[in-house]
Image 1 (tube, helix red, strand yellow):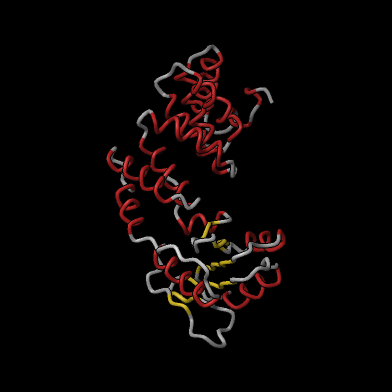
Image 2: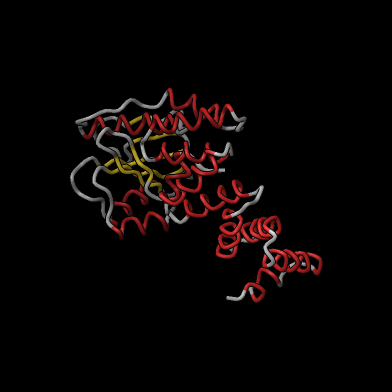
Length: 266
């Protein structure tokens, strides 16, 4: 679509419309400062395609705003689950000294289970003054220790430890025996754990949701072998956080709800 025909340029009051079109005109003439501010406005208005187009122009520079544009591009790619591209853009911004990109790299590596790299970038962001980086760095020191060759009961206990780490401070595994479909309980969340060599099905997601629904709590599901596509779809519909255990027992966030539980970007 031709830029000036986008709805982005036609909504809002007369002054806002005029400012956007002026930015577009200047950006098309090669003014990278205008291109950056145009892209920021498009991003805030959720016109991601337009934002991405002009952030990329800014990144090609030279521009004083290139590292901020790279930060935005990394976030756009992350939100599309294009993690390698997100890492590329955040890394080039972080290498230039941009602290939010450093923090975001820490989040990315933490979610991928690369704790040494996560600590490295959280520490660098902290030293640069990022407001959340110090706490994130210190929290990694209390991260649950890796555990191998888990039994199903071990997995329930480990899931509870991870939930405590994520902020559900009273999380406890339910006693062995009938549990009504709930393996871990906390005042703010309920969880089920399937530690076996079979993918979790849609019907199992439905059964768990049926047990947890109405409690007004976050719903978390842990699986060793992953989930069927129908199970993932159903969990997304019901905002159930899905995690997959790694070989060392570290849970990896699978969907957007789980990423919010495990740590979010700013």
